[in-house]
Amino acid sequence: MSARARLAGLLLLVPGLACGLHSCAPAYDVETLYGQLQSSDSEVRQDAEEKIARIIRDGRYEVFVRGTQSPQIMHRAPSIVYLSQMKQPEARAALRDLLRVEHRGMLPFNPIRMKPTSEESDSRILVAHLIAQNGGDPQALDLLLQGTDGGPADVRTATCYAVGALHDEKGVPYLTAAVGARETEVVRAAAQALGIFHTKEALEALKGLVTHPSEEVRSEVLSSLQLQEDPSVMGILETIAAKDPSRDLRASALSQLARFKNPSPVPFLIEQLKAKDDVSRQMALESLRLVSGQTYGPRPELWARWWQSSQKPTPAGP
Image 1 (cartoon, helix red, strand yellow):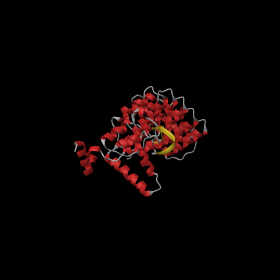
Image 2 (cartoon, one colour):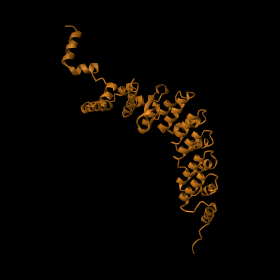
Image 3 (cartoon, rainbow, N blue to C red):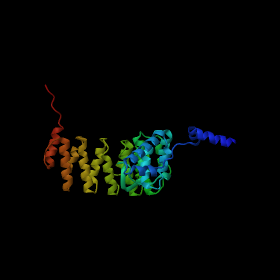
Image 4 (spheres, one colour):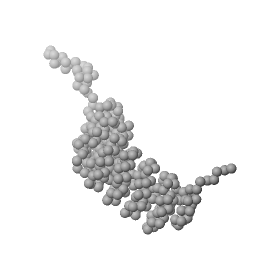
């Protein structure tokens, strides 16, 4: 008997040895698994769930990496989500690699609310969000930014959103540079992402946008300022409230001043009771009442007298 025949006979007698030599791990494809997850048969669904749990437990990340490139676009986002649940270093590296601009794709999936949607978003935003949820990755930002400078506006816009989703403060310089872009959509994205970061550099970049010609950008700045707790924000809000061309944005800035519960803007708010438009006067009055706890009406002189008397030092006791 030949050596080959003897080996074949041995493999037939010892199935475990055959699997060891030929890697008998079952082959999975996400198209089949995801189809089974939608089955009307509960046993089929449960079997698919168990298979997916086994894939994650065994660290077979390549199954989901293939899924991120599936011809079925609805299978790509779930594959990224499942891949992010794997703790093995190889799986983490594979997830991180999806941040490269050459791996980007448009997915009908909301990367923050984590659910399907009719509006498509850049896959890198979802990847960045999942990495941040898992505690971050010090190598992620560099991969995300590689090759994006000078790229199309849609790529740079999505990159700004992904930097915000990644929550890595080292991305603030990229966003600070992006606020100088010619394209409004890039600047809006940078302004939104800057609101995530509570740093002096991020706040300075937002401050520089309060006179941007686009009302959409200035509105985004106000939304980002709402996430900031630094008292220096009050000065920026006062500038917007006094000078912005949009009545709605002026009113919004006046409203935000009340959330600090700080008496510093009281003189400014009293002055805004003399504003030309009714909306600003009403918003200034509401903010004054919230900040001061007083219930005076719209007459600025009554507020001015109260403010002056409240600033007098309390006489010392005997």
